[in-house]
Length: 192
Image (tube, rainbow, N blue to C red; front, side, top):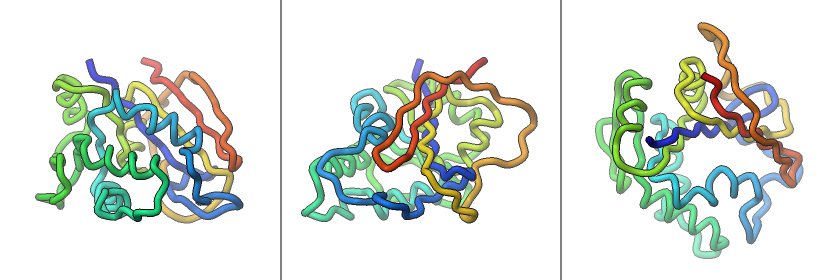
């Protein structure tokens, strides 16, 4: 059965934003180790990426191959090509169509959508949904594991990952990795 991994990018105060901080966003000829763990090393085993509407539209505008800068490092070009060829599922009640290749739009109950997708043919699934989708995933314990990319800033604005929960969700720590820019990557598995 396919495994679902939720990717979470957040500041220390639980905001789903990418603020600037010293040495963040500097161009690199190689993917940083945290990006490598969350994405680059998973290109062969992940065949579906699930996103909320805003995340989907933002990724299409920023990361599709159509947004390619010819001077980019090879690893970024690889990432763009991967996102274009992988199956993308946009979770939306508003969007009805997309011109991004290999995309489909689904709406309805998140648990039912993910359960159906787990039973489909294919490799593993990354949930790259944004704070609202990930919060719902955590609240209902829908993912098999979670990668938390924690940036070393308190930002105070932007969408929040944490909100009201019906009960406790317990996760088991698998590993931690420090980043070169003082970020930390926390890899947890679901405890069921």
